[in-house]
Image (cartoon, rainbow, N blue to C red):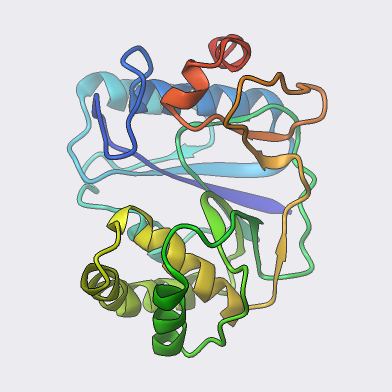
Length: 244
């Protein structure tokens, strides 16, 4: 199985979710790539997506990474744009930058779309139901997923892109009208669109994250999501992050 690894980022000191002052988005990206090169055992290529011009330093760095595909002139790309990119693998692994691959992931491949459950607290039940109705998906209670790590069959990627382009403006309007935070608009929409395809959930060691200072087992966690500055504030996670 060949996996296309899609990573979106920008060379920013701060972004909406907040980053640690000593771990910028680009620093996160480099650590993620280091962890992939060390621990990801599938056949793979890495694709990066960015909306701002790359620095000369970053162009040089990308050129030094094997299995990394990038075009320094291809700017103006956002997270949704990643889904329209033609790639030649079997599945796409879409990642936030605040992630590390600690061990080779045990992916399931029987379904078209895999994610981690995250509950429904992103928006109100009223908003969930309104968006489900627009998309044409029955509301089924706990639907929320975490958008930071997704594993998607390339067979559905183009259709998923078209759905994201079609429904995102509508979803933003519904959330705005209901006076709720738009921080999770992409995540809510993706949670609902997942139900259009055959789907399943990761094993507990993929997209593993913790909001407290508990230690994690580096021998069993496969993909760690350290949640940006939250991870850097956890002494145990900080040590793991700094290994890469």
